[in-house]
Length: 350
Ligand code: TXA
Ligand code: MG
Image (cartoon, rainbow, N blue to C red; front, top):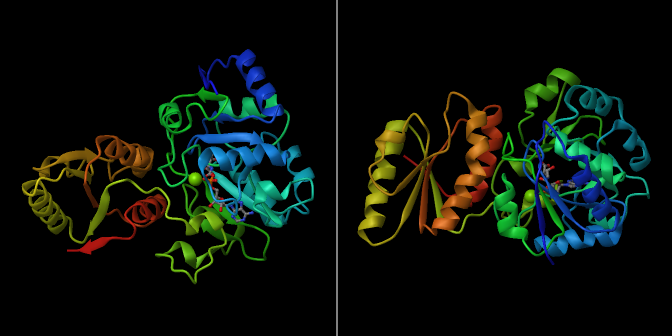
């Protein structure tokens, strides 16, 4: 299959390209598109054979359900059994935006899209290209992150090209995404909304709108065979770089010392080493390939670069990645959730 790559200026959208994308989607084929979080791999959510193609292109386990993307609120009602009051409040505050809500699904949503669950995940992305594409498709769009299963999520069209070239019909290149990590997922089917995946929209932002919010405890630490996260995708070893990745936690001076020492040890033995640090500590590392992930003063710079850095180290085929940890408040919690998973929860306390 020949994958068409089209650059789209989000401030001056070429609607003839959107029409082309819409037509491809209605035919049951796949189009990758930018969102404010990561690039998505889209197909018609109401066509079971179209969503089956997504699983095949990604190599994704078929029990891992897809998120359905809509561009207008009126698209929600035909997909879900009820819209609880707290869901309405969250939608009003955060849609379009990086918040996915879990509803009880109607039969219009095929089992193939939800991995056989009787619930469906829905979000309205805050990205002009995504919204224009969904409008042009005239159907809701099922879209996971547009990476091969197990690789870091794509934050540029080039990342999507690396993973999906020849496997999908079209990629809409809307430039680098903003946030860089996937949407917050909140289950609104129960009395107390529950966070199933942390993201840019954090617990206190949600609590300001709907009061008490719970956190699925499966997202707080490593998973064993007995844990059953409510978001099936959270059980997989996601975002895994090819290198052996260890994080160093503790007083920052100790962290710097420990990483420098370990990097030197590895390099002396002939291995290659990548270091993930911050703008504040960039100058303190002497060995290896040192990459700042962003500034601790503004965490969105960190989430923005996170997957790109992991992919870069994959491309450079470093043997080891040594990384600093970050605070776990607000966006930091979502950042550490991704980094710890990527590191397979290997943390050295120093
Ligand atoms: O930011 C995002 O959400 C991106 C962009 C493309 O929108 N999409 C994304 O999709 O991250 P994906 O497929 O990589 O992650 C979807 C997550 C998985 O962990 C899946 O298990 C969970 O959502 N999920 C989907 N439907 C669900 C449901 N009905 N109940 C519980 N979890 C669900
Ligand atoms: Mg994903």
